[in-house]
Amino acid sequence: MILRLFRPSLVSLMLVAPAWAQATAEAPPALPAALLPHDLSPWAMFMAADWVVKGVMIGLALASLLTWLILVAKTLEILGAKRRMRRTLRAVSTARTLQDALLASERQRGAGRVLLRAAEEEVRLSFDALPNAGGDGLKERVASRLARLQAAASRRLARGTGLLASIGSTAPFVGLFGTVWGIMNAFIGISQAQTTNLAVVAPGIAEALLATAIGLVAAIPAVVIYNVFSRSLAGYRQVLADTAAAIERLVSRDLDFSHAPKAEAA
Image 1 (tube, rainbow, N blue to C red):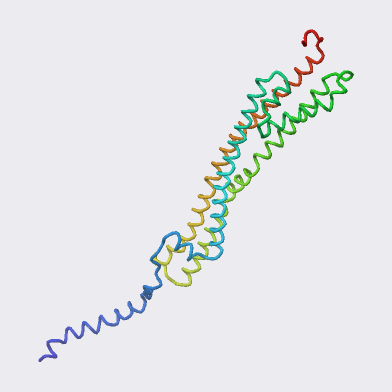
Image 2 (cartoon, rainbow, N blue to C red):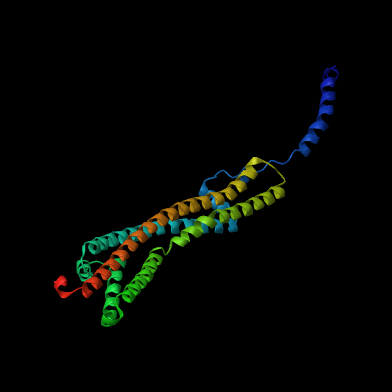
């Protein structure tokens, strides 16, 4: 009697059991909880990344640090050079002779003082030839010498800014290389795990994208700082050119007074 009552249930269980066993056999095995990453912070992703991606990230971080160091050093250098050049330009603009300008800028330093000393030296070397050769040759020699000194001063002050241009142009591509390498390793890991579970796929791709993010962090400030320095150097070169032109005027004025009659000079 009891078996007769439970016979329909036993028949249903016997029909359902094979299907349940087949579904259990086909389902992918669950990953252990220990294998699933829980910390996706930037530092954890860096530590879990491939050694190539780590090298890319470290290189980009050093490039970013170098960018900020150049910013601080070159800002102080450019501001100091501009301030010294403006003081020299005021001294030269208000002087009546080259000797007055030298005396007014005696305690100053920088490229402006170098220009004044170079003009004085050229005048001293050419002084004996002035009565016979005239002053045209002296003016040309002074202008040529001042032009070369201006170019040297500009190159010296612009030293280091080319590195900013290199960082700004190459950092995104270096970060992209790290991203491609990381995604390739992530796909290899997916194929080995034989699962498309998001918990397995996401960490590798996030680690790869972190390289691109660091590349942009290094490149964007480098480009902006390089453009700022380019404008500042252009302003410095303009002040330098104005100082050189004022020195040339002083030399020309001294030559004119040296050829003037003694009564007018007195």
